Length: 293
Image (cartoon, rainbow, N blue to C red):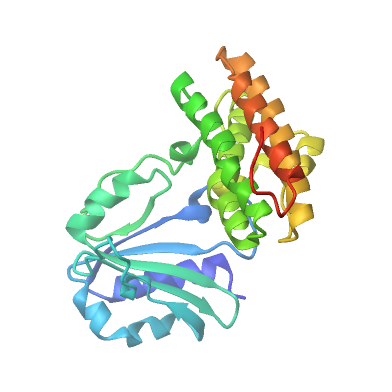
C-alpha cells in the first residue's frame, strides 16, 4: 500500500503537469484531526478545472493513479428527482489493487469557488491562479452535535414513539423486511439523535458523533453503548420484539436525562400509550379479528 506522502505527491504532480487543472483541494477524514488514522481513510480530492467535459470524454487519464480494482462513476446514475450537472462537476470513485481509495471530483472553477465554502474540512493543496477563497484551518466544526431546541426535542420523541406502531403491526403480520426498514430508516435515527444530544451535553457541544453515530462510543459509558448495540437484531420476529423493547427502554431513560439537563418537558403519556400498544400487539393472537387496548 502506497504511503500518504507518495499518494499526495502523485495527486499534486498530476495537477501540476496538467494545464487544465487549476487548483486542488482535499476534504474528508484526511483533513479531520479528530478522525481515526487507519488504512481505510480515503483521499477525497477535488481538481478545479476549466472544463469538466474533457475529463469525462476520455477517462483513460485516471489510470495514472494506479491499477484500478473496481470503481464507480456516481454521476452516471439517474436518480429520480435529482439533476446531475456534469458540466459543473463529475466524480470518479476508485479502489486500487494496493487498497488505496481515491474519491476524485473534477469541478469547474465557478462551482468550486462556491462549493468549497460549504465544508470547513476543505483544505487547499494547490492553487495556480489564486482562484479559490482563503480557507481557515480545516475543522469538523460543521459536524459538531448541535443543541436542540424544545420543538426539535419534542418532534424527535414523537417520531420515535409514533412510528413504533408500524413496527408492531409489521411484527404481528410477520413482515420482517418491512420491520427492519422501519427500524433502521425511521425509528433508530431518532434514538441516535437522542444519544448524540446526551453526548453533546457531556461535552458542552464541542464534538462530532460521526456518521451514523460511529464515534459516540468515545463518550458514552460502555454499558450504555453495549445496550445500544443490543438494539440491533436479526430478522427473527421474537428476537426483534426483544430488541424493540430494549430500544424503548433505552430511549425512555436517555430522553428523560436529556429533557432534565436541557429543561424541557417530557411527554410521559406518549411513552405510556406507545408501550401499552406494543405490549398489546405483542400478545395479540395471530388469528385475532379485533384489537382491544
